[in-house]
Every structure is written in C-alpha cells, then in structure tokens.
Length: 419
Image (tube, rainbow, N blue to C red):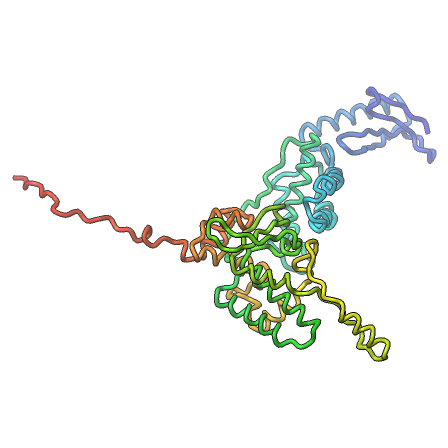
C-alpha cells in the first residue's frame, strides 16, 4: 500500500489495498484516529486537500467545535485508577469496598463517561449523569440517594487520578446543585427499657434451652449483648478482639475494676475503657469451656468407651490468642428481637448489633459523661456524637442556661417632669 507523509509526519496519505485510485489522508489528533477521503487520484491535489483538512481540524479544536474527546478519555483514567487504588490502599480499605468501586465503573460510569475526555467532564456533566441514572433505572424508580452518592465518590476518585497524571488541573465540584439540608435523624438505639427487655430475653433463652450445642451459643450471645452495651465497641471491632487484647485493670480515678481493651477495627488501633459491669460478663466468658462437637450418639460398646475417654479429658478454656466472640449470632439475635417486638424502633429502622453501641453512647450522655472523653473512648468525633446522639438526649440541654431571666431593676430613679 503506497504511503506519503506531509506536515512533518502529522498527516499521512495512502491508497487502500482494495485497488481504489483515490488517496486517503489520516492523522491522530486529540486522542483519536481521524481519516478522510481526498476524492482525487492526483497526489499533489491530495496533499492540498489533506493540508486544508488538518488545518480545519485545528481551527475547530480551538473553537471547541471538534467532535470526540479532547485529551485522555475517562476510560483511560478509570483504568489508571483501578490499577493504582487496590495496590495503594492494600490493608486500608476492605476488599468489598474496592470491588464496589470497580462495579460502579463497570456498570454505570464507564458506559456513560467512557469516551468523553476527562477535560470535558464538569459539574454539569455529573448532573446529566444523575438525571440519566434516574431515567434509566431497571426497577422503574430512581436509585437511592446513598447509591448515587457512592457512584459520585468513585467518579471523583477517577478524576483525582487524572489530576495526578497532569491531564486536568483540578477535580470539578460534583456536589448536587439543588442539595437540601439533610434532616438529622436518630441512630436506631435501644432505649433503657428496650435494652432491659433485650438482655432479660437473651438470658431467659439461655437458661431454658435444653440442647447443649444451642445453649452454648445462647449463653455466648447473652454475654455479647451485655459486653457490647457496656463497652461501646463496633461489631467489627468485637469480631477482631482476642483475649490477649483485653486486660482487667483497676482504674486510678474511680478505684473500680474495669476492662482495658486494645481495639482494632474501622478506625485502626485504639483503646477503650469499659463500664465496671462489663468485668463480670467477661470473666464469665473466660471461665466458659470451649465448645466441643459431640459427634454421633455412641451405639456400640467400643464407641461408648471412646466417648467416656473424651469426657474424661478436662475441658479446654479460652487461650490468649482465641477470639473473644468466635461465633456469628446474627440469626439468633434477630430471632429474639422478633420475639420481643424489638426488631424495629418507632421510626421503622431495624435494630442491629450496632444499636448496642448507640445505646452505650446515649446512656453515657444521659448520665452526664463528658462528650470529648466519650468520643475518644468510642473512637469517633465530637461532631458525630453531637449530630447523631446528643441532639436527641434531653439531658444535654442545660435548663438553667435556657431559662435564665434578666434581673428586674428596683428603686429606679425617676426623671424630673418637664415643664
């Protein structure tokens, strides 16, 4: 196939191998291969047509009238982000969260933004994306606010990767243009009466269950509820907790025996000091033997002898490297919540294990705990406590400061009458 270059190699002229007489011109301009037929078999005339065509492309580009992406595309930036993110955040973000970013890109962001240049994506383009998602939902209703929020977070991270590569100068403002102030809502927590009903129900269930296997799980759930409500741990922090992370110490300020817990979870590593009541519940866990599967009921003389030998072996107590809460009690917990009509709060929000943490924070506020010390002990911020907990607790309002009265002036001097 004969070829010829002009304008310093920026434009190539060629004839197709199918035997046509006309010359074609091509160039790679602004991230896209572009071609055009010169409609002539004269090389000199084809050079003039190709030169005019290339200059026309440059003029349209400067005027913003050129179709196609200007610079690297969103697809390219998304590929860079995917390659960097998982490696850069290894151990700092859960694999599930990393996979969610990939799913956002694969299912929604790439099909919409993919061929656009990153320089073309703006706040207006993000708003067009929100409208597109609302109109093309498979369920017939717009996606949830939190779903769209997470997708915009992924979009913002991809644009941040483009900034690092020098493809754009900054990340546009992708906040919703008509965003209203969100109503501050109460976290689903157990009121003191609800919590009392819950731990009584778990304790009663543990006492009345007959089968050894299920009784062991019920007792573990009962202690889990009591310890979580007296420490304020997050469920993921409790799941990672080992016995070597928990120490029984005497508090210098109060002189009471408490648990000093080394926490590993959502906010990294930290410490937590429990309520004194948590000590006896933890001691009960320490003295409870590990669960050993019983196997099938012995039928022969040999099997019965082997069972007697197994029973003669002393029960093994938890070791320092064992998990404090090794099981998953979600099904049993939900079963008890349903039985006691505690599954939902008055606003229709479902109670979960997190509700025990919310109960702990609200209970401490009701008893007058210092909000800064409480935030530090719960590994959260004062702002979060004020926004989601303190605003709903009447004890945080100082009636003396609210109902103050200005003192009345007595024996005020009377002004002389004007004559």
